[in-house]
Length: 144
Image 1: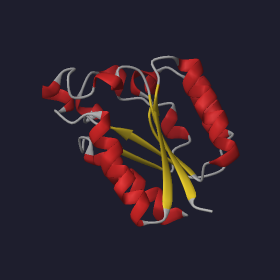
Image 2: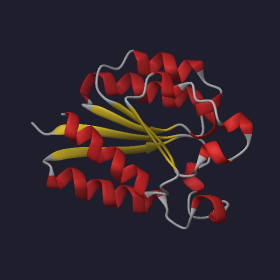
Image 3: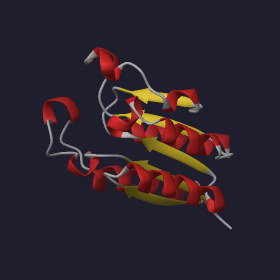
């Protein structure tokens, strides 16, 4: 049975490629999914890609991943800086977790410098554009 990797995306990431392209670039979540799916298929793994603008839905996704996912790549968007609830859900997940940010969050506003998710993440990738997702998937695959 192939290993499953979840890519979970938080608020406003459905607008990737449209919203502030000077910060986030022109790549879309569809582009992210296509590249990640190619990596997973080459490694004999499956991919499940999801996005929600709602904190509770993201928590439910993490809870669901506990049953069948080998690893999580998560871009929690703005919930990175505010959600202890997402951190708590990730703490209940046993596999590797990689936190991804498309922009270089530490070069931006001070409120973006703190991440609750980083307390659980096995790795953090920021500022690499949508290619950061590929790096994250490669890292998860290397840990399986």
